[in-house]
Length: 304
Image (cartoon, rainbow, N blue to C red; front, side, top):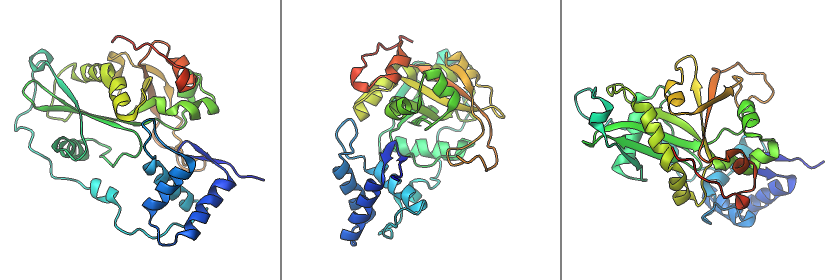
């Protein structure tokens, strides 16, 4: 009987796993990068801009190794994630608290954080030191935003990454069955981190920032990845927060998580924190856009 599994949004069969084993046997001197790149070429696994999905392939290979399906060659150098995830010294951001009225800080500037930039170092440092979950390197499609006031002082960090693989209440709200979700998941992005540092105490700032980003994220995503996103999601830890800023920014509360993680499919592990699920549609016909093959959608953006 053919075994079928889904990893990194890709359906794998016994034939696919045998291909990986054959590549490992035929090229014992290869490191993990040449292997993942060749696999992408064999499968024609590319993003919307035609680039090989090398990082997704490497993550897929690691998951296959953890489940005992393959044995990868030893790393030829330390993982770059370990360096990126290190806690960098916090860059100076000003000695005094910011307690101004929002109108006195506007217009705010919202910038996409570029790789290897000073903004990236600041962004990572702020999340690592100030966010209760910390910050680790993001795998897959993502956007980082840094928000500053009219004086150039940093006010907020916002990170969007891969949407949750499965979430029952969200899937019901969007009208997703399993096949539709797997086909359209990358048209949804998750607000995985939202930080306003403790020294920034400005009423209405959080919902205003969410509104600014909602107006531009579709075009930013299109520019970076060659396809848009049609909706945003986030999960709010209800033991810590009430989701007030998301509600004020017109995000929709669509349910709550079960407390199970994606790795606890047998429901044997301890429950994690239950979180409220919020969704923000970016187009008027978001359900159709998220249930129709990408080539067939021409959705109208919502005017925020």
